[in-house]
Image (cartoon, rainbow, N blue to C red):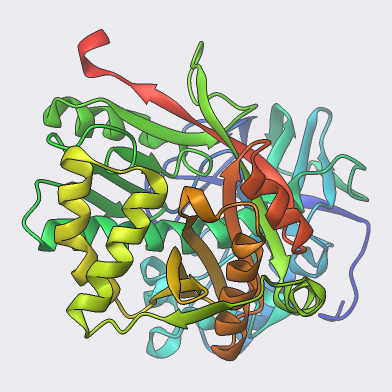
Length: 432
C-alpha cells in the first residue's frame, strides 16, 4: 500500500502502554476509557493526554517507510498507544470514526505533532520526519474516545465517516485558538510580574495560570488548559491555595471540569476569516469624524493615555487600576501586542488592543467610553484591528464576548461567528 491510498479496514498490530515516556511496550490488551488506555501515562502530561488526545495511533505502514530512511523506529518507540495495520491513519480526515473490536469507538481528533522526547529515534534528532506538515502520510494521530471498551492485539478496525454531530474539527480549531489566547494572557501576567506585582504564574504546556493575592477578581486569578488536560486541576487548586486567593478555571460552559461545578460569566468564542472581516468592514458605515491610530509603545504619554481610556471604558478602579498603570507600559512594548486609540471629532473615545501570534489575531480588550457608545465605533475598531492583522500576515481573527452582549452582536455583524461557549469555574481555597 502506498502513502496515497488508504483502506476502510485494518487491525490492531500492537497495544502499547507505559507509565510515562518512550518506548511504550506491547501488552495483550487494555481498557480504553475516556482519557486513554488504563495503565498508560505521560511524562509530559501538560501536552499529551486529556479527552481530546486520549489515544495515539500510528500505522505500521508509516513506521516502515520511516525506518527505510534509516531511523531507528519501531512499534511503540514514538509513543503511540495503538500500532495499526492496513489503514493509512494520517490520510484520514479529522472526525473519522474507527470501530475497534467489539466495543471501542474512536474519533480522530488531530495530528500528533513530534516533540523533543522522541528526537533520539531520528537521525540528527530530526523528529519532523513524522510531522504531518512535512510528511502527510507518516504522522501519528490523536483520537477521542466515543465508546469505551477493551482493545486487544489483532482486533479488527473499521473506518466510518464522521458523525453529523462530530466536535472533532471544532476542538482541533480550538487548540490553535486557545494557544494564541493563552500566550496573550501570559504576556499580560508576565508584564505585571515584571512591574513588581505579586503575580504567580504557571506556564507549562497547555496549562497557563496566574494567581495574584493582592488583585481581586478573575483577570489575574485564572487558569487555562482544563479543556485539553483536565488532569491539571489539582495543580491549579494548589496554585490558588498557596496564594490564598480565589481563582477561576476556564472550561466549556456545557462541560463542567469537576462534578457540581457551577458556570459563571459565560462567554462566546468567535472566529472569523480575515478576508471576510475586511469585506464587512469595507461596507460598514463609520461615524463621521472618526479616526483610529496606533499607540506608540515608546511614547509613555501615549501609552498612559491608552491606559486611562481603557480603565474609563471598563470602569476599572482600586487595585486593578493601580496594576494596569504599572504593567501597561511594559505590555505595550511586548512584541506581539498592538494597541489603538479611536477619536471622534478630535476627542479620544475608545481603546483597543490585538495580539498577533501563529497567523491569528486575538482581539483583546476593546472599549468605548460610555458617552460615545451606540455609534458604530466598536465595529470600526474591529475592522481596524483586522486590517492591522492582515498586513502582518494573519489569516484568522479570534475574540471572546459575554453571551448576548452588544460586543457579541458586533462580532457577528463583522463576520466573526460564534463557535463555542465557555465559562469560569470558581476555585475558592477557603471553601475547601
